[in-house]
Length: 132
Image (cartoon, rainbow, N blue to C red; front, side, top):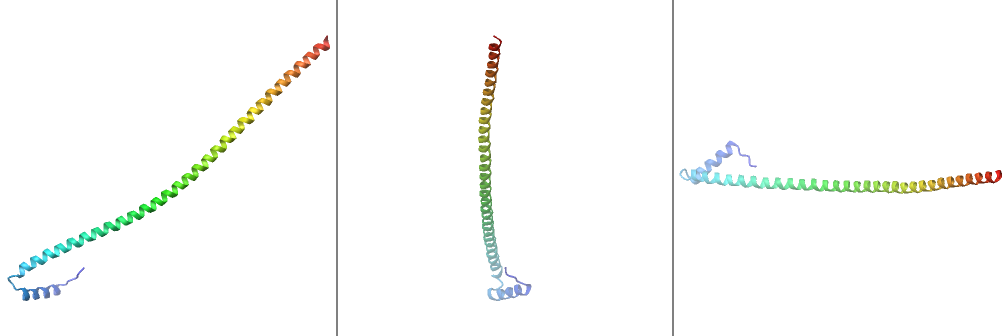
């Protein structure tokens, strides 16, 4: 943050020695050290809070993006589900139609066989009558 070179620190020490005096300079240096340490800890704390807020904002943005993607996937799944249900309903309808067609064909076949058996009985009866 602040960039002090050797000469700047030396000038500050000389001024402090002249203003405070040699007997109070060590106590003043200790106080300054404590204040600098507190300032560094406070700055580090603020920095970590800001970084965690930035990470939280980024995570929130990622989460919102993923929620949007999940919503899109849900819509796609619903569409696919509807398509499959339509196909199954169509197949069920076709199966119902094919069963109906099979039943009609079976009925027609049985009717034909009944007619054939009746006609064969008639011809057998007519042959009997002709023989008599």
